[in-house]
Length: 420
Image (cartoon, rainbow, N blue to C red; front, side, top):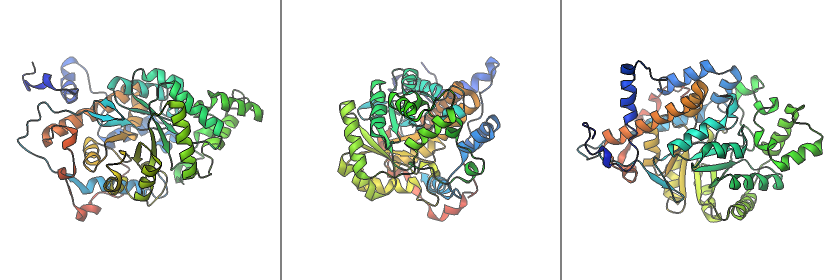
């Protein structure tokens, strides 16, 4: 029995907070903590491990980074109201998503080209997600095959994030492969059929696909392999040309419409037998209502972490309005700007059911590969578990708007030049 908490063994979700004690005890065993997970120090350490191009792709935002700043300022404006004398000894961090119970309301956001951060790309990330029991999202821009990522994730809960090609046969092939590899939902990203203007990436010609990296989902796809043959491109001898053809198929600069969304939703349901279909990149109430109208099981409120539209609304501000409009009609997820457990808490309090984390684990991957991802995510889980304990919340359902206060007068107190 734990002398500090005799009820600990009665908890129904993992004892994530014990990772704090484990790290405190490391020095007694002659060990050190892998690295500091304070976001600012984590970011700086990742920068020191990455090439210039790797760092710029990880950190660049659209335009003047005003959307990125708005994301962080919105989190800063919302404040948690702790409750005292609450029995949190048997607190429960678990929740459900599309009928699956997960031990915490945190998932791995879809981020592409992981090989620019670590030679093994998405594989160690998917492995850690599976170990922790957290949802993992594979990006169409991934740098490992769908099948290999599925194998690395093991029995984990995994979703496939689709950037939809204009080649319908290729779209169907990608979705079929995802189903065959055990992915349990499709998340169609709406806001990145063309890259936003990112000054640093443009100035350094920093686009890995043009240099033969990041087309692995295509290179391992039978339909795309056929397209390569039709163009007379040998992907081994002409990796740059193969990458360029993949870009032309997926990040093509040609917009889709709601009619095409309904088409791909139908294809997904056909090949998957009716698994959930979601839209990512929703920022307006009107689009959220349309997603519900056409029958999407879920939406991800996201502005792509400020990487697409400069000067856009903060995702956390959009979340509140969208929840008011359709919160009882679809499963609402959140993404963009998460840096801490308190950020996760605030998004949940404003109505998100689950929160996806991106840049934090990318930095961990850059620093120490699989061990880095594990340390970052175990630290975030421990921080969240401890936050629920000291703030007086017994379960996820208790985290609602009553738990927050908002101070508009503090809007400008967060340094606007912060990269975090």
